[in-house]
Length: 86
Image 1 (cartoon, rainbow, N blue to C red):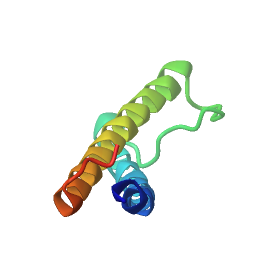
Image 2 (tube, rainbow, N blue to C red):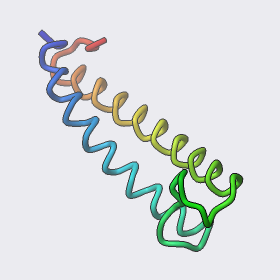
Image 3 (cartoon, one colour):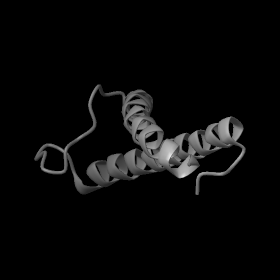
C-alpha cells in the first residue's frame, strides 16, 4: 500500500523540488556570477568555462535538492504508514 501512496506524492514532491531547485540555482548564480540569468549553452557571448560552470552548479543543486526531497518524502510516508516506500 505504501508504494501506491508514495507514487502520487513522489511525483508532486518531484515537481515541487524542481521548482525549488530552480529558485536556489537562480540565487546561487546571482551570488557567484553577479548576473540575473545563467548562460545558455548556445549563448555566443559566453565562453566554454562560463557555460560549463553554470551547468555544473545547476546540476549539483538539482541533484542535492532532488535527493533531499525524495528522502524527505520517503521518511514522511514511513511516518504515516510505518513502512519505507522503497
